[in-house]
Length: 184
Ligand code: PRP
Image 1: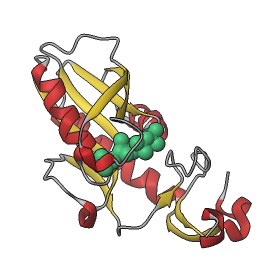
Image 2: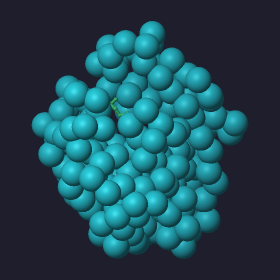
Image 3: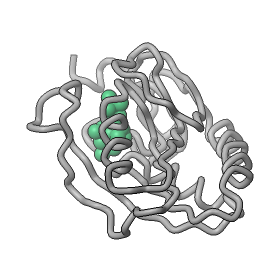
């Protein structure tokens, strides 16, 4: 889905497909160097990380294994509780593996902070993070993130894996939605 397919539902394009893919190539080049010769497990966090995982993993030249986790905040309430429940766990054992968590966005940082602690507790040799987007103004906890695509303003964004009520994940760009889409 292109930006033009959304018509007036799309308010503004923040990042074009070209910008996203160029940045991913740059991040992949760093990861290639940093993880050369290492036993790497890419862990994608469903569902938002789908696109980043697909493009980043293909941009890499090093050999990696991939796995997925699905997590959710406890209850259906706010994510800011920081209490996370595992909906789908890894299929692989992370013991002594160099784990690189792949995320679409870091908002409050609470999900990731929990996830990093969880993976370290399982005996991973190292746990680092690669995220396409980060909202510095929304941070509630400090998370040490090794690879960041873009820092963006604290606005609700969709596209490139990010959804609004499960829609727009297949949008090629990252953008903001017009107010009428939210029904307000
Ligand atoms: C998003 C994103 C991160 C999390 C970031 O997932 O993929 O996992 O929120 O938020 P935080 O930094 O405030 O913890 P979401 O729960 O929207 O699920 P999804 O990936 O299935 O869309």
